[in-house]
Amino acid sequence: MIDFFSETFLTAFIVAVLASAIPLLLASIGETVGEQSGVLNIGMEGLMLVGGYFGFVGTLVSGSFWVGFLSGAAAGIALSMVMMVLCVWLGLNQIVVGIGIGLAGAGVSSVLYDFQFAESKPRLGLDTPWTIPFLSDLPVVGKGLFAQPGMFYVSLIILVLTSIWLYKTTPGLRLRSAGQKPASLDAAGGSVMRTRSLAVLFGGAMSGLGGAYLALISAGTFTPGMTNGVGFLAIVVAMLARGRFTWVLLISIVYGLFVAMGTVLQLTTLNIPNDVVHMMPFVAVMIVLTFFARRSALPPALATAYVRGAR
Image (cartoon, rainbow, N blue to C red; front, side, top):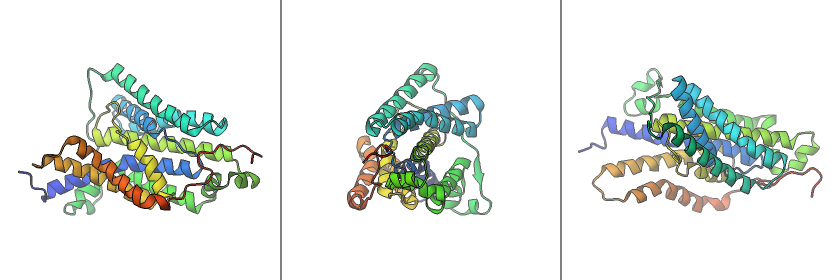
C-alpha cells in the first residue's frame, strides 16, 4: 500500500505539481503580454504544440535540452508571425486568424510526428537538475523545489522580469497604451504596429517554451495533441489575472495541484472514472472564473485592429 505521507511520495507530488504548472505559466505570460498590447491570440494551443514538437526534435538531434528549448521558442515565434502579419499589419479578424493558427499548429505537429516517429516513438532522458546547496537538503520540499531542471528557474526569472518590464519601464507603459488607448500612443510618437508586433512575437516565444517544457520535462516525449487544452486555459488565466503576474503564478499552481491530485486519486482504491479525474483541473479553473470573472477588466482595444485616423 502506498504511504501518501512519506517523504518520497510528498516530494514526487510537489514535482508533479510544478511539472504541470510551468507550461501553463509560460504560455500565460505570453498571452498576458499580448492581451495587454491589444492582441488576443486564441491560437495558443497550436503554438504550444509546434513548440513542443520542435523542442522534442531539437533535443533528440542535439542531445541538449537547452537547444530543445530554443528550438521550441523559435517555432513559436515562426508560427506567431502569421498572427503578426495578418492581424497587426493587415488588420484581419484576430479570432478567425487565431482559430486557424490553433488548427494549423495541431495539424502540422501531428503530421510531422506521425511521419518521422510513428513507429519508433522515441523518448528523452531526464534533464540534469540544478541543485541549490543547503536548500535542496531540506526534508520534503528540498528535492521538490530546489533540485529542478534549469528551465524551471529560468521560467521564474522570466516571470519576474516580464512583470518589471511591463509595469516599471517606459517600453512596458507603451505596450499597455497600445491596448488601452492606441491613438494616444500614436499621438505621442510611439508605433502601435511595432509595439503589438513585438508583443505577438514574445507571446509566440513563451507559448513555444511552454510546449517545449511540457514535452521535454513534464512528459519526456512528444505525442500529438499532448497539450489537452492547456493553451485555451492560458487564455483564461491571462483574462482572470488582468495583467497581474502574481495571479498568473497562483492560478498556474492551482491547475498543477489539481492535475497532481488526479494522479493521486488514480493510485487509490477509489473507483473514480478517468474522465472525471481529467476534468478536475478544468473544473477548478471554471470555478475560479465564475467567482472572479465579473471583476475582470480587459484592455478596451483588445482584439481591435488599429487604423490611424479611424474613429
